Amino acid sequence: MIKQHWLVQHKGALILLPSLILTTIFIYGFIGSSFFFSLTNWRTLAIDLSLRDPLWQTYADMFTMPRFQADLRNTFVFTLLFIGLATGIGLGLAILLDRQISQKGWFRNTFLFPYALSFIVTGVVWRWIFNPETGINLFFNFLGINRALEAAGMDPLSPGWTTDPTIVFSVNQLLYHLWPDGRVLQIEWGIPVALIPIAIAATWQLSGFVMAMYLGGLGGISSQIRDAAQIDGAGEIRLYSSVIIPMLNPITISTIIILLHVSLKIFDLVFAMSGVGPGFATDVPAIFVFEMMFKAARYNLGSAASIVMLVASSVVIVPYLIHTFKTRES
Image 1 (cartoon, one colour):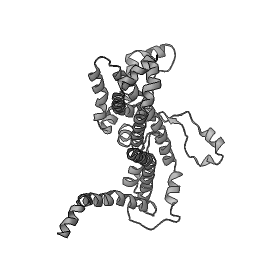
Image 2 (cartoon, helix red, strand yellow):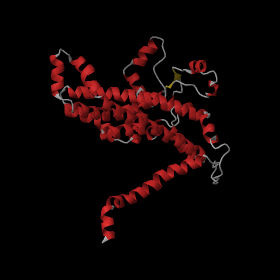
Image 3 (cartoon, helix red, strand yellow):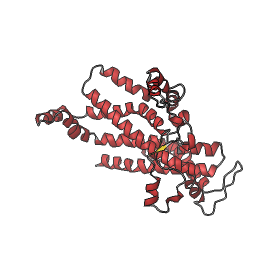
Image 4 (tube, rainbow, N blue to C red):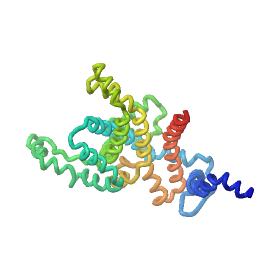
């Protein structure tokens, strides 16, 4: 009888116990093992679990590698472009739908459709679109733009898109001026041209999701608030800029957190469109981990990069989760 009573009291914990055990082993256990491998000398197919001296030497080597520095630059640039474009376009689409435009249902479904695709499909399609030989450059010839330029004695438009290694808006000189010891930088910091098409493709796929997020927020704004603002003399632009959009700040924060998480772990879209790109112009940490682990057999280096990705994601996600839990409790 006592045993049965104990089981009834703790049935919730017993139901969750198998899930907790599996989570501990296959998530936290693997995280711990990855961190341990990053501190070892395991740099070949032969297992070597002896610790390096000093322990952080793998991380020091990784952060001074030109390729990994390019990965950090690309992640930073891609995140800014992707989040800025996706958030701005998604908000604009949501406002258009909020204004009760004609063919609202068709419009909404059209922009939500890309979100149903996988990144690998999106990458294959957009790789063809930005192909210098068979993609969007053909439109320049079809519209006669290149013929007009050639007639004027100018070079025809034939951008390399994902094959262009050019870095624009380079800030290396500024960095060296602010940080005299910054010669440790092995790559040029700026915006890789080859990374811009990838940001466009990611924006195309996720802007519909952002639109849906904002539509949910707009649906929760009372019509009385709109009416009161209009009675006070607020026009359409002032209504949205001063009243409605500020009320959507929680939606904006949640959307940015989600998009930031996507950008930090992006892999399949970049892998399908360009891979590492010319001069690592489109390389990202996830591809770095994949190639170090499964091609170069640098298991300690791949593990270290995966830990850096985990920490970067945690810096974003954990404070957001803590804030969310505190808000719910209050």
